[in-house]
Image 1 (cartoon, helix red, strand yellow):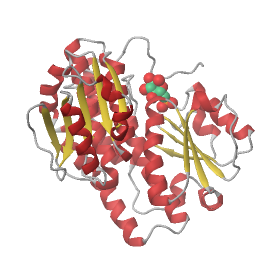
Image 2 (cartoon, protein in one colour):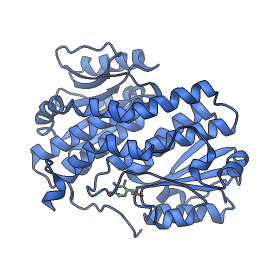
Image 3 (cartoon, helix red, strand yellow):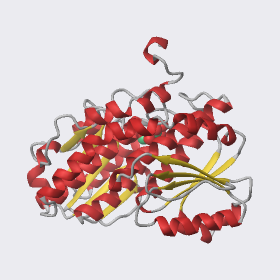
Image 4 (cartoon, protein in one colour):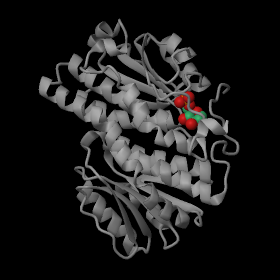
Amino acid sequence: GAAELGPYRHYMQKEIFEQPRAIGDTLEGVTSIMPELFGDKAYGVFKQIDSVLILACGTSYYAGLTAKYWLESIAKIPVNVEIASEYRYRDSVPNSNSLVVTISQSGETADTLAALKHARSLGMQHTLTICNVSTSAMVRECVLSYITRAGIEVGVASTKAFTTQLVALFLLTLTLAQSKGRLSDVDEAEHIKALRHLPLAVSAVLALEPQIIAWSEEFARKENALFLGRGLHYPIALEGALKLKEISYIHAEAYPAGELKHGPLALVTKEMPVVTVAPNDALIEKLKSNLQEVRARGGELFVFADADSHITSSEGVHVIRLPEHYGQLSAILHVVPLQLLAYHTALARGTDVDKPRNLAKSVTVE
Ligand code: G6P
């Protein structure tokens, strides 16, 4: 009811603002990396596995895509990420030493449960879920689990479930790196410190809301938008585009920025807002030249930079700067302004933010 909403207009907005608490709770008690974070049998399972197969749908799938970058870069373990509804019906080559990771807010998504059963039927018995509901079918079906502590998520468009999934997936990355002898004590301590600072870092990003509201008024008048990111931030661009389409009904597509020239550049005119996720990572210089290609065609850029990105506002280039540069974890910070942009754009268009047309919070039938 209205009381539970407190100062917020919608559950989605409340849930966006709950993220510092949700992330803090998801990390509660984590002072060092150890397999037991994922269950009693994790030590033995993690020693045996040589690869990871991630299965999920929707926003949870994008969390999986993000995790692939972490797992391959930090733990050096090969990862496949599959949309559950595709995986369950296609012929694939099973690897019995693969760790099957399902990601699900609800733990009841029919396609993801069926994909898990399919993997098991192919002989893959090492199963782990990252799930927000400890009593769900998914948790019962998997050998190992990590329960995110987002709390009940009401808004159909997932927000705090996503960022807490990312936190859990980063912990999984560190734990697998440790199991494979690829995590030094020094690195472990640094990663834990960065994780524990996340709630404060997310709060600082939430404080950018007034600037994002100003942008949303312009977005509300558009029918199309393009989202760009590179590397780790490509899945974040995908999630930003998904949020915008789900609740504002603006057609949005995400591309890895290097792929612009292979198609989407044809769509760029002055009517096309181009949202760019631009933290100061290894690809920033390449991203900047992608942005020039957009500007040269008259496209209007809306850039989420960070403290170190060195991108400044100019004609047709609008910049909001996240207060910190956050290395590998910056994906968790950069999705937050995209959630706010979708929310405020939807609000300006007057849509039913918490219950977008044709969508359900949890899809328990095929
Ligand atoms: C539905 C929801 C999405 C969610 C997806 C997967 O489509 O509307 O927000 O990402 O299901 O749900 P899950 O509970 O498995 O994460």
